[in-house]
Image (cartoon, rainbow, N blue to C red):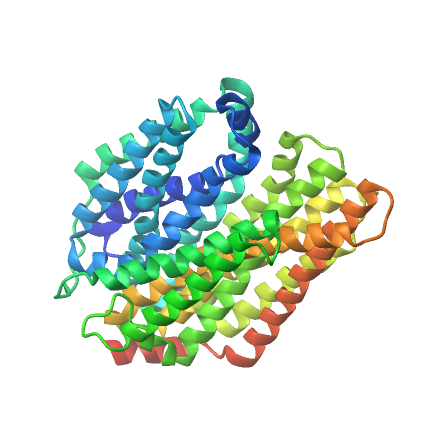
Length: 471
C-alpha cells in the first residue's frame, strides 16, 4: 500500500470492522421470509429491517466529515463498533419486531461512520502514487461483503436459524473491539474547530432520509401514492435548504462548494450511476432466478457468488492499473465490461442455461471491480487534503442514496413492465418485466461509459504532478 508500517494494524482493524458492517447491509436478504413468519409480521413490514439500515446510514454519512475532524481515530472507532456490537446483541435476544428493528438501527449508526472513516484514513496515509492500489484493497470490504452476504445468511438461516446471523455478528464485532484495544493507533490530522450545526443535521436527515423513504416505497405503492410523493417533496425541499445553508454558514456540515471541482463532480456522478446499477441488479437477479427460473434461494445465492469473488479479485488489480495507467484507461476498461455484461444479461431468456447466466453476471462484476474504488479515488484525489473528508462523505452518501433509488426503480420497472406486457402467462410476463429492468440498467451503464469517455482524463503523469504540488 505504501503506508507507514506502524499504521498498518490500524488500517487492518478498521478494514475488518468495515467489512463486517458492509456484510450486514444484505445479510438478512435470505432470512427475511423466516423472520417474518417467526415474528408474525407482514412482508412489507419485514422489509423495513433492510430499508431502515439504508435509511440510517444515509442519515449518518453526512455527519462524518465533522466527526472525523473533531474526534480521534480511536474514540470514533470505539464508538462505531460499540454501537454495532450493542445492536447485534439487541437483535440476537429480541423477542419481537420492534426490538429487532432497534438493533438494526444501532448497527447502521455504527456502520454509517465506518465507511468514510476507512476511506479518509487510507487516502491520507497512502502516497498519491499508491492510492489506487490502497483503495482497491478497501474495495474488498465495500463491494465483496454485500455480494457474498446473501449466500452466507441463507446457509446460516437454513442450518441454525436466523438468530445465528446476529450471534455471528456479535462475536465478530466483540472480537474487533477487543483487537482495537491493542492494535488501533490515532491517525494525526488537523482538527476542525466549531460546533456541529444541528440545523444542518436535521435538514440532511430529512433530505436524504426523505429521498430514501420515497424510493424504497416506490415499488410497493407506485409514483402517485402519498407515501412516495410526500417524503420525496420533503426530501427535495430539505436538501435545497441544506445546500443553501452550507453555502452561508462558517463551518458547514458538508462543504458543497467542492462540486465546483469538475473531476470531483464527474466522479460523484459516475459512482452514483455505478451503485445504481450494482445494487439494483442485486435485487432483481435473485427474483428472476427464484420466481421465474424456479431455483431455490441457495442456488440464487450461489449464482451470484462467483461474480462476488471476481469483483473482490479485480478491485486490487484495478487500483494497480489506476496507479500505472491513470483513471481514463481504467474506467473505460471497467465500463466496457460492465456494459457488455449487462447487455449479455438482456439477451438471456428462460431457456438460458444457468452457467451462461453466471458467466454473464461475472463479466458485469469484473467491470464493477474496475470502477467503484478507482472512481472514488480519482474524484477525491482532485481535492485538497483538508476537503477529503467532505468528498468522502458526499461520495458515500450518494452511494447509499443511489443504491436505494436504483434498487427501487429496477423493481418498479420490472413490476410496471410485467403488468403492462399483455402476456397471459404470469411467468412469461414476469420474465419480460425482468428483462425490461435489465435493459433499463444497460441504458444507465451506457450513459456512464459515455460520461467517462468524455470527461475523465486522468493519467499516471497527471497523478505525479498532483503529488508534487501537494508536497
